[in-house]
Length: 314
Image (cartoon, rainbow, N blue to C red; front, side, top):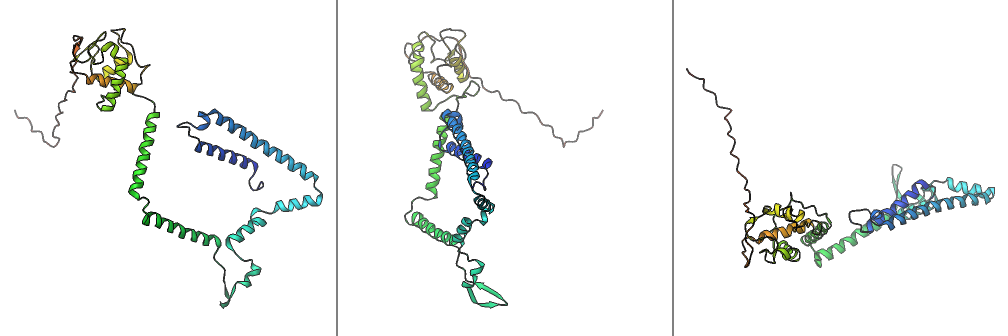
């Protein structure tokens, strides 16, 4: 085996087999295991060192043992090593068990009596590997028949449903692990109940002290009317919460305390308070904000290229 696989192939092969196994079985997310977990890198380094050390020790022992042999033993060892793997006794024994073939000297034992033009037929048995494989297909077919057609374990529709559920679960995990890249250019108004409930919770904990729980305003302005000091709309409110107000030092930036998606939720909740008119609300401050509507561009008049110009008359 050592002769068949040289050391410069054997050591990297064993090392990368162990490396691949650790990467497969250790859950390290989107990073390699040896980067995320330093102990894995340390283990791989020690394992590679031991592999090389073992090869060096074994090679040294082989050399010492060889020098202790007699000339006759050395010749026997060289003769044994000169035999190729496919001519070795072990390989021939394995092939004999797999094929049940007879040597040329023993063909007379399986030769049939009839011949045609000197062509004789051997009554060889089927190769055992083929027979075992054939039996295996029969067993597989029986198990498949009982499981899916008699017992009805599950069908393709159920299998598809299971795959979809696994994919959705994986997507949800990836979404939670993905970086929060929401910003003022990408932000949109959220209207679903879950997002507004999340925004209300953040507002109650972080904003109600200045704006009241109902948004009517205390130290901070009233958030339920149509007037805005720093501009309304989801983008302006998102930017104000994230970066703070230049006009009012008490309105601090929250981008270090809240994630961008959390700021999006609380901004959407604030805009949902428009028109609620709570009791005891502060007077309106700032200017009335009107959402800019995209002005329709007049369609460009297309000239008819097939129309022939009429010559001018005097």
